[in-house]
Length: 328
Image 1 (cartoon, rainbow, N blue to C red):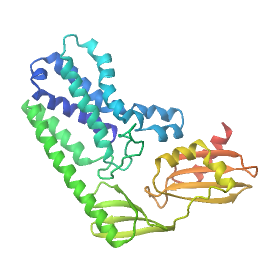
Image 2: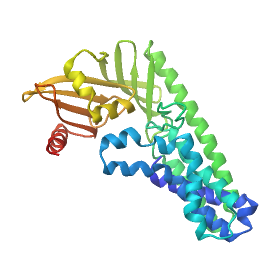
Image 3: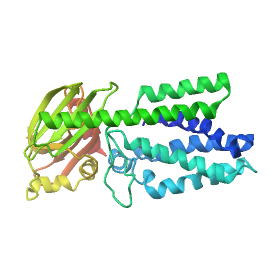
Image 4: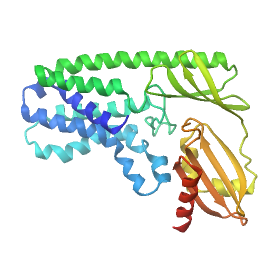
């Protein structure tokens, strides 16, 4: 989910924590738990700082190790080491429990969007992205804001957020059922599909669709019980013996893109005396193009001159980024 949603979930868990007698009976423990829950709700995204290094490091690692099983266990103790000295006498067990719950909830809800996490790492490094809930869901965010208003007005945060999270559990179940119905509908319309990737939108029954069969890629969108195809591509395997491809595949930006994208198409063309190899993720279609890309310039000597991976919404901006990368 987006950062704002993680933050409100942290405060929501702090409200829920007042049902814990150890938290309700001690204001010091309550304030410690509140800070711990908010910190736990956002700290797995600390790897966002990798953007300062480069896009390849960010794409390859964001929601990776920091969302893994060992990290979920370790984060509460790291947060406790930082915060508990500020609250001498606070209930340590209650603090660790609610902070662990906050970290776990962060990772859990991230699994439901199209970006996903490596939540099963180190058992499996596969990205788990269910594509059920949008990264920002107005219903989830608004329900928390309503809960804060009720908390302020009535002074019953525990009961309020117990009700809210029960409603949200039902909401997740309904969205999961809607997702499954949509997948069945697409398989009925396009028999022979091997994989279907849905990206939810802000509207209940609207999804962006990327799918693959044995020999084709399909890109489209659903609107209720309607499927509109936007693009259809021939599925071409990568020729591992091609020397241009071999050079491009060794580039860090390409490796980062391929580690993250489960469905993409590629092409090679000659341009201004060099080879340009481009990969585009078919899950993301906006403004008439596929903005998530990895692009490499390879010269006639099969040396990578420049490369870039990330989000670009025009060919002009992509060329500018490649030129800037070349000059570094």
